[in-house]
Length: 592
Ligand code: GTP
Ligand code: SPV
Ligand code: MN
Image (cartoon, rainbow, N blue to C red; front, side, top):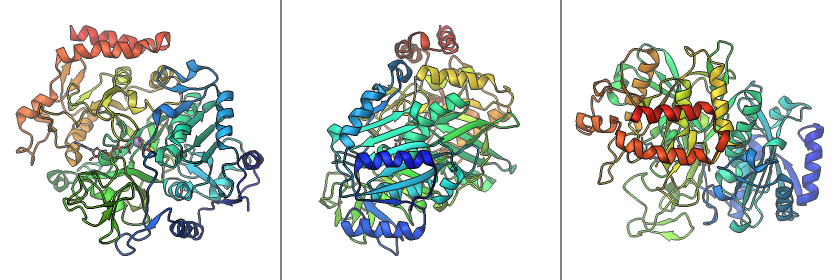
């Protein structure tokens, strides 16, 4: 039974049925009953494994093909009428040609399969921030993940009514052939097509494809922003709650920061941290002139390795019921899951992420893939903010950019003003991670952590940031910062403990927003005076000297960075906003 009479939807579905030739069609109504039927089917076919019902109730394990374990950036296309609109940092194909290629690949590929029709809302149903999509897929794994990550079902169709303002998403698993894998966005058509993958960000179309690539384009048209940002609430001893958005590239610490546990001294003093979002923020100006953010998602698709009771107990707790694990190690000793960094006790009797027998005491191979993930319902999170469902979003005090830089970028610095902050975001660079296929640990420019996610020309995106700034009263605009938790010594050891201790830095950031703490002016912006970062309780780990080191702005290293920035900017030609060019000139002058 169709869940809607919406003509634009029914007509689109007719076309896709004609193209894909499914054996049957199932509308996903979001009911527990229907989802349970699908879980049972996936278990019976071996697509998913049911885990220990006592230890991990309602949890499932899934393994993707070894060739299909991460986003594929070189096969991700932005299909705008001209190449210029997609810009030099995106892969582009002419839309007509791309549709033809994709339809040829997808034609009749649902034969013998069911077409699942998933109506979903990004954002609380009915919020002015929210947007609606339909994803069709031939994968139960996708259905079950989407049912965790987004709000799914009939209420979404009721909220849409007759409108044709919805995002068309077509996913076809096909043969999971890496040579024919394409993840394509058509921003002008509100359309996403993904073929030959069955993994995470490639196929959960509400996430990166819609909530960032398509939505960034929509935001440009409509005057708002879609960003690769966590949303964190810090309650300080005065009882006031302040919200921070932070953009770090994939696998650079968003989920961890969003769910961090304050250091003991801070906890005792009354600090509390709540999670609003861990990956994506949609940001709009509110009636009071401040910027407000919502998390359009309804769950967490988090990196498993490294998640443990010490680093992120809130994330771990979130995975204890109704979660899906992808490409982790299957612990056969008690039918649970394991991954590197969970504990120091790997199972001896296990199946690795590739499906092979694995003995954690003997094997030199990894049990879990470095980009293995958990999909966990947001409601499971012990520190979920009570504002999570607030349709108005939360007011943002600070925007924080950051990445993995072994050298160069200090632990934290503050930009001088909005435009300087946009510049700081635009010059972000970070070492690559396992979240995308390709080499790991190579420094690349990743402006605002949006390199793989910006649905149009990055230069126009920077201009959009500048334009948003023009509409803001500087007193009400969020202050913009940059952080780097990943500075290393010459032996390759991290110099900053990170995780919960990052609150020490966030606290300085909030003090700066309140104007209650001083700072040192440097060529790149304001850095803390070392005595203003509270090290109580970690004096043994971080000496005053180390702190001074990671707060230092090394002029000669920054001078070496300038030509790299210029080289990157040169790709954008005349499209580079003048404001950004001026900011670079200022930096150069400051470094002389
Ligand atoms: P995506 O889901 O891919 O967008 O990643 P993310 O930005 O949410 O990253 P996540 O929080 O999952 O962290 C990724 C990896 O970075 C994990 O292995 C963490 O253990 C590690 N990590 C996170 N925060 C810190 C930190 O403060 N210091 C250090 N050294 N490592 C960290
Ligand atoms: C990321 O890579 O930034 C992720 C995981 O959050 S994925 O959904 O695969 O994009
Ligand atoms: Mn992400």
